[in-house]
Amino acid sequence: MQSDSDIIVVGAGAAGIIAAWRAATLGAKVLLLEKTPRVGTKILISGGGKCNITHAGTVEDVLKGFRPNEARFIRPSVYKFPNTKILEMLTDRGLEVYTREDGRIFPVGQTSRDVVRILQTYLVDAGVDLRLEHSVKGITRDEAGRFSVTYSNPDGEDETTSAAAVIVCTGGSSYPNSGTTGDGWQWAKSLGHTIVKVRAALAPMYMQMKEGDAERSGIALRDCALKARFGGKELARWRGDLLFTHHGVSGPCVLGISREVAEKIQEGEVILQIDLEPDSSFEQVAERMLGLVSSAPRRLVSSVIEDLIPSRLVPALLEAAQVPADTLNGKLEKKARNRLVEVLKGWSLGPVRTVPLEKGEVVAGGISLDEVNPQTLESKVTPGLFLCGEVLDVAGAVGGYNLQAAFATGCVAGESAANLVA
Ligand SMILES: Cc1cc2nc3c(=O)[nH]c(=O)nc-3n(C[C@H](O)[C@H](O)[C@H](O)COP(=O)(O)OP(=O)(O)OC[C@H]3O[C@@H](n4cnc5c(N)ncnc54)[C@H](O)[C@@H]3O)c2cc1C
Image (cartoon, rainbow, N blue to C red):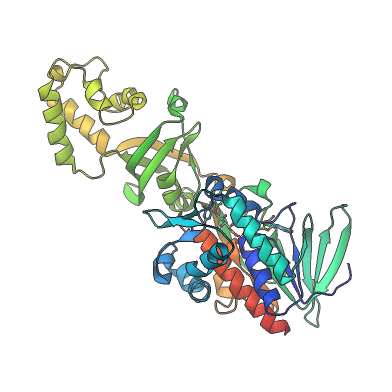
């Protein structure tokens, strides 16, 4: 391929689309190379196909979805390209959005497909040279500071092109079928960067399952508190819904603490505990339980518990509290009643087996933030190289934070690269 572009953007995900669009609107000739046959492959599967585009609130509210060092790093980008900007781009071209009570912003009656379709119109209007099914294999920089990018074209042939600036936005390495296989880290490493160990974040957890545990698969708990314990101490907790799966647990509160668990599990056993009555103290639950069993002495204890949790979970809960299933309320001793309350307030699911990285919505780790200028997203070790989106060591919470970080850092990288080549 003849080299006639100023900037090569690698990866047409959330960060790459915005980076390419921004650079092209500032007058740069932009070539956007994407491995898969479509743009926004990961946006398409985001939010269960509905796309939680961003999070509501001020910039500072949005930054609360990140660890302090990550928030500090992305702060200049999010101020430059806040949630209002991406929403404006989308709503200007027909997308209707709504904000959920928890601050998550979604399209109204539309899907992630509409989001991607609109973003693609921006690429077309800005004149970005988009090449799908172009998988980049390597990036090198010569002594004059010019980059050579080698890729395989749709016919499987290798070609090389060059440019004064390259923006790497190849994402992380979860959901590898969506095209994200951590390629950007290898090139960044070869260009002098440090890669912070990559771990799962926003991922389900696989538990050490006992016989019969898999039968709980599909049962959902609403608004419980999930706690992870390590070495007898609470490591993390999250309030929300939980889903039992074939291999363990998933759902918002599992995703919410998965990063902490993935980090600690390298060092030893992490135990999960569910508080099924998070709004009540132990004493309050004990008092309620006493009232319930005393008012119906001839009913089975199991029927009382059924009023509190999904009926399919009752046998497991009674077993955990060592209360025989045929116990009548009238025969329930105080000690056994207290054990039931203990289990309702802290039901142990046992040790976590693993937090599968490839099943996470994002990965933590990636290109070290110390080596990238947060004002421009330019590499501090390789001038002319720009890095944005999930390829960086940034991982936000569930709630639209990660797409927001990708859009915002993409915008700044595109703008800075365009200024460099102008
Ligand atoms: C199931 C799921 C649901 C999610 N839901 C949400 C949500 O609702 N809200 C939210 O904020 N976040 C969500 N996320 C996270 C969010 O999608 C990512 O954090 C975000 O897409 C990262 O943007 P990015 O541009 O950095 O990377 P990506 O969007 O992953 O884009 C990277 C692109 O680079 C391409 N690429 C990789 N290697 C090469 C190569 N060698 N050559 C050329 N191209 C290459 C890939 O094909 C891909 O298109 C979800 C993630 C998953 C997996």
